Image (cartoon, rainbow, N blue to C red; front, side, top):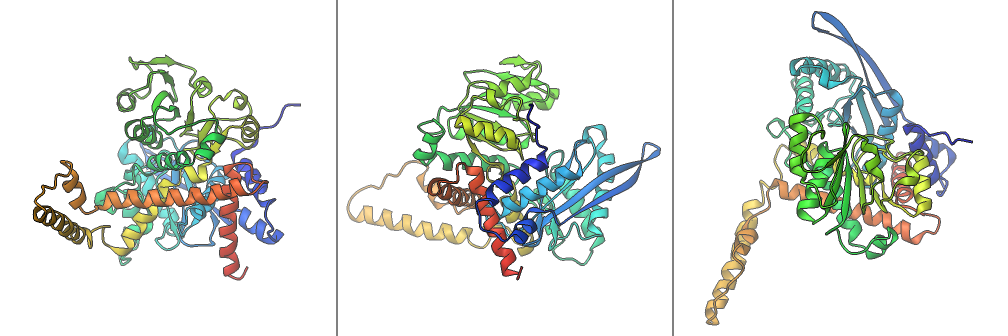
Length: 475
């Protein structure tokens, strides 16, 4: 009998149920945490190209155990109610895992943004934002969107401006959405955040030799062979940082029009620039191109990073995946059925709700910045520099008194004396969040015999935090 592939939403529910079965939750509370609280469907018309076009959009609110709720808005033809509800559930668990004080939400518009001019997309986005905002489904204290697949800084700026136009006296209007451009209330480090979070997650994993051994690997990130599926914002930054800063070798890059493979390593920036100019990887001159991109998922490597769509590793190909370590940079790239097969093979999976939490973590920082109306580092940066200067002056005076010359490395004084700016503080906060979340997961993974994998551990940690929040509310 052929096994039926679960849908994305079914996969999320199956993984939730697997963890909930290991917990002692009252049945009513378990059901309350699992179900999506509400989903709003909107159908609106926009006059374009001489006629009215009708668009369908969604905003799902999974859990309001904390408010505001948080989650991206994606523009894609694949958007549907089940998908946004599954993504909203993942946002609930993701925020709980990394201690971001949000409930989970998600939105989507069923549209191919590549089929529209910029001015047309702006009209569509503003109308969608209007439909959501007038029902408080965009609101700094109730529901705060962010970018997702098919959207970015530009769309978030349009949404923020639309909300401000509708709420002219709301001093916190900029906090209605995150992922905005810097000159529209954004924060340094947001664009790179999800990819940077993937890097920090892998760094933390490789700090624990016993965890690395479970993946049948050894040593550090340096020299590890990495295949990345999807060189969008997340995949590009993850691949770039891992190759440039950690010494990993990006041997494969998979895109919609095929894949590139080079066992000696690909130049991530060169490939990214080629895609920007040509719309895909076809024709790239410095690597082997294959039109069947999905086959490269099955190539030999140390780390596989699916960073695009959900369900790319499923019942049809899971048994052929050779990577001993998979880190889910996308949401739901491994189906529940594939997850079981990979576990039986001994593959270690760093789950999506943790691995791609960098985006919502830095979105949290941006939201706080917007509410406080001051950039990070502004109050303390120069004071830090002055205190560091005192230490340097004392060391130089002591050296002179001892008749010696203090000779630090050439750039030591420059680095030590410089106070932390917003980007450094954001990266520091993200690194801290990713480290702490991983440590809470690995404790259960190692200490409980009934917890066989990091995904189950992540769900256990998250569900427990959500349950505690509901109990505190009297449920």
